[in-house]
Image (cartoon, rainbow, N blue to C red):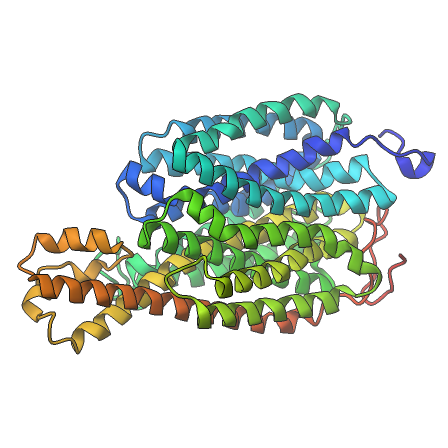
Length: 547
């Protein structure tokens, strides 16, 4: 390995970090561009918005399910070589995405992108550990978090502009060009020949992937298959019960089996798929819980708001971008600036305050949100939520990275990727199922007491498949029934009020999640985040970390 800047006293070049950061930007841009392209994809493919959300879930599912395998591939063959190879795979996925003729091809493209990202995610941390040390390393870790947030801002701005004036496809065409740039820059990375003694734990791969896929598919189909009793859309039933919650429970059981199997592999002196030393301490497990919560909340908001603006209000992608800009820009700025607080506040205090801010912001949004997302009160709520998110997204990653020795950098990267993408998949799926479920419940309760919308009219509308539609779309549907003009207007009123009520309840439930996460945030470490420890020198729990 080349001599590091720590031993020579010289500063390492930042050119490799450009490739590393752009690798993060590509992945984050791809996912963030999906919500802002929601309206265009729904129109192009003729599918409901929940189908487009399946693309997000498919991407996140692929990353979460195979990122631990990706980490071992990086260790076995070298992070640099593997990183360069999967960038080419990611490029292919974006070509499929840009020219996808149907929603099925779009979902497949996101699945392929997720498989590539499953290798890119752990390689980023390993590449940083291989190229930088000391203050440069801490700066590089912070830059990785900022790159993720910055990509979200860029995706909403660029996606909004192109989606409004040209179309959603050029948004993903940009990633084809970006992938080519990253591939060229990858030749400036230090060579890393890997370790031939690393073996792939096939049983661990199967257990982890099966567990994560079952959990993700279960959450993604709660609405369509049923929360308890199976709905008509369920592919099969178990004694009349929906397979969705059963898949979630089975997935959690397999996840526990994976942990038991991994522990046995380590005790036997074999190479586990995930080195459990990265989550040995209570503070590290708390960081994982906090990361899952913060990413899940972000995914829920990033799906809910564009859904409401584009599909319900019929606004353009650029209007969606403007509405979400305060949130994304705040996350980006705070993610860069929060590192300045590490000299004064501990991760524990920052985590508690961050989740408290998120809780207050979501409660505020649930109270003030109306049919106009450009209202000042709503902007204040989004900015406040962005402050909490920006502080947390950098903090929890830094805690995980700095708590583990350098030799476990790849395992930290895979743990980060698994947690973040499983949280994104669950958050997106839950947001869709929750909002549609709440909408259906509110609509049914309103119809039961509404004398204008008669049972005869209700029988002509498919109320078993209630989904988010604009008022114009609802009027079109009712034109095919015997509804009178008075009944049409009454149905529009019910639709408008039910959607807003569903969104408010959804925001309240998100606030409850943020509030509950303050508890594990109280177990974050009390030392200041610093440098990735040298090989074999992880920080014992409770030991103060030097500045």
